[in-house]
Image (cartoon, rainbow, N blue to C red):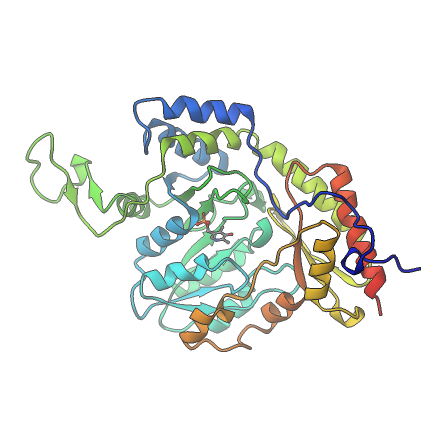
Length: 398
Ligand SMILES: *Cc1c(COP(=O)(O)O)cnc(C)c1O
């Protein structure tokens, strides 16, 4: 017997709606923010320095610069490695638009490499195929929180003299072969947007082990201006003196945002544990349903998962992704789709990118939807999601 779906007037699986992601702000977080807001320095100050130190300790990175958001972090990364007009940068299309936009900000050309159909991360073999004599860097995204195959990518980058940037907006807390994300690539960027694993409302970080890159990163976030005497190009004229040495931006973060992120960082291991529990519950249930595809984890990956992506076997279902998405939404489980391949957007089509360049990414997009995943989901919430997905599969199974 097929149960009547809520989308056709049946009883929804639950009464109130749950969404694919949600921040967790405690009373203690609020108290910390209030304290810093009433202190003397409210923009980039001691709280930001303390957070940078804590992020270095947590990830094993040598240097960290906090910035206003994850997109600013990516822009700074692209500027620090010197992306200019004529340069090509290889990037995945299954990501938020900012991963490729940061290349365009610098006048460079994004070149899209396809994903691995099992892990959904950029495929090192396709990176190799996309390298030309103009290639300057690879921007690899730890999609859903699963770290990319950094050994293989490092080898390719070293062989061809390329920079390796890791867009780790999804993957703070993850590690690959025992190395924490943040300590692996030439530059790693984090985002602290509210849907990400820990948040400051907005916020970003740029991490590196390279002192020269760190020097540039630091300049780019504050207009290219330095007050560090040891770095002056001209004579120090007095206590007021400072120098603008390159064209940077105001990408500072406030100190109360840094304090909030720092307080959240203290809970990250508990968040990771709960996220992994929820992923395990979903995997256990969905791997038994032949109409569904479960994301695979590469060997050596320990992922603090930001997203749970469910794949639909459209050949085994009599609906498309849109019908499945709307049916789930009517059951009061609000999914999302991560992501529309970047080059599908009108802006990128206008730049001349054609559909068909990354067949695995395009096939993935047709059947993908993201289910609720955040630490505050109860076991009952997770059961509701499983119940709703199962109900819809039963309804549409061929
Ligand atoms: C969220 C996100 C960004 C951008 O971060 P913001 O802090 O929102 O600017 C970049 N890349 C990926 C993969 C993201 O998910």
